[in-house]
Image (cartoon, rainbow, N blue to C red; front, top):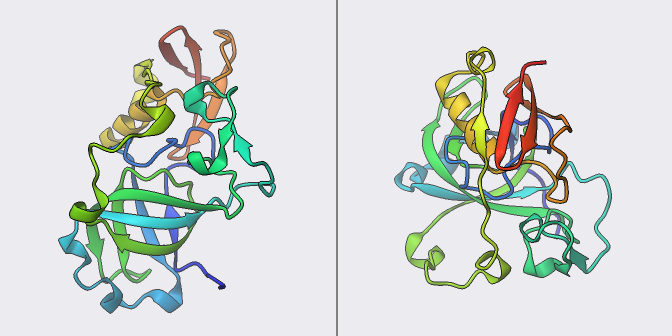
Length: 222
């Protein structure tokens, strides 16, 4: 079977570093789905606005090398413990496909780019190819009592985020909320613990630099 992209995702993240490690955990993070010219038929979206969530099937297009290992090191386990790749959501997979549930905000059927879908909570980089879109159906897709393996026993402790006013004022309120939620999840590799190290990431066209000391992340103006 050969598959080809139907759309491209547009996000405030121009690079991998800083992107939330799961969909839905940064609820304020908004993005858009723009269809490729041959798929810009509004009829293909008829009825989609009756759903609150969508499944996106997409490609880990920024991976620089093919996955060959049967095991990976999940960040939730500190980045040092290996576990089977099929027991994780690692981007380094034999078929580099991602699956994300996103909240549907609205649909614009007639724009200069054809139909555009606005969503929130995505964990996709800007420019990510999307291969399919399916509606999220609660009765079949939601299993609130299900076990979640190593995730259940390894809580993700969020950081206290300090953003100075001179940096905060560069963003719209929604962007600032999304940035704060993203940084609280600690974008660093989980084996890093150097309070003097300055990290950098691109977000919404701005360079964000920060340090982490204990449980506090501080954005610095460089």
